[in-house]
Image 1: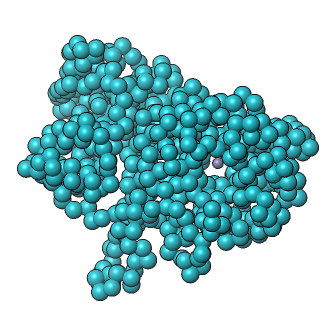
Image 2: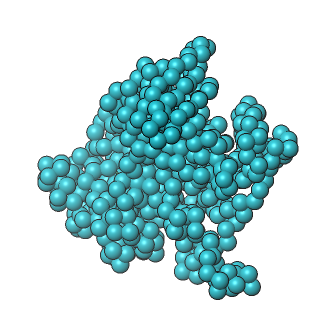
Length: 504
Ligand code: KIV
Ligand code: ZN
């Protein structure tokens, strides 16, 4: 492989999933992995196999379906973790095991309670063990940003000799400044020379993750670890779309370096991740934020009309963002719908197209104009669908007058039976949740609730995301999509319950 390619290692499904509230079910992870492959990422870190049977299963199923990108599982320097990682990726075309161990004084003393020479020994044993499963082994010096550079060299030298092909230098707590990262990566890559690939993995605690990644690339890093929309622990990881577009836009600085990313898939990937996680990028976020290409002031609008380059360094089309034009309406047929799906880059199975089309027709009856983002939301619902143990059939609400008693009557399908019931509550939403709990025999605790309009207009589709903890377990995300916000709310709550059941 050419040394001018910066490998993109995407960790949305592992570090990104560690974002508060970003947990995803297996079906959702598979769809994101397929989209990442389409985007052209070189390595997909699909999870941490030993973390839970659910994580293991998701990595295994992703490995079965991904054939171009390498699939990677994270592991601690522990035999059972490495074995689980190896088993989970066994069916992938290209398998990578990613092992990590902390190397900073504070982590070694307080967290690991290990001496530096014990750390080196453990790292070497872990790499050697991982090599018995795959040649492609990556080693990460956790908290490398605060590790002593001469100790880092000792560790890197030892793990290279044990067979590690990629050496990751994470700034785990996002502490470093770009010039410091640049200098450290230069020193380490001169030391490693061409014995292995140097990778970086920057967290965004000081808002510098992308700047630090670019500084690292300029100084010899040839793999960069990042996430879609910059999701990740605490303030997140370096955002993939920002790094890729910086390298592409500033070829005067970076050439001959480039990535394998198909930038036209950036917007669809960002949208899919935000629809699934319910975490929308901030409006002013670079590249994928709602306002990234909006020109508000008259002077700017005038300039852009005369010559786009007066105020635009990237064209929206470069990231796959076409104008959100009105595409279809209630008179559009199946052919037009399928055609639009293709233009938006979806290749769905016939049965998924049929179901999405049914939903589209229902929507077209309720909503005059259907925009691209409406279609993206419909498709995301369709492709991430899990078995509907409970299915919402009808919802009727009454009395939201002040002083009245709000109540909700519902019909839910369960094992081919229709169950109807009603409940009152301290508000309409409370009544809806109470009646669902009663019909389904659960006690859910609502941890978070969010509603967004998918596109514009008074009749816009409402996208509801709830986070619900059932039986005191970890909160689960549920999605609802309807022109009626309360109906979407009930769908989302039942969706979270179905997801909980499928994960169990
Ligand atoms: O931030 C970090 O150090 C990590 C490692 C596991 C690579 O995520
Ligand atoms: Zn990390």
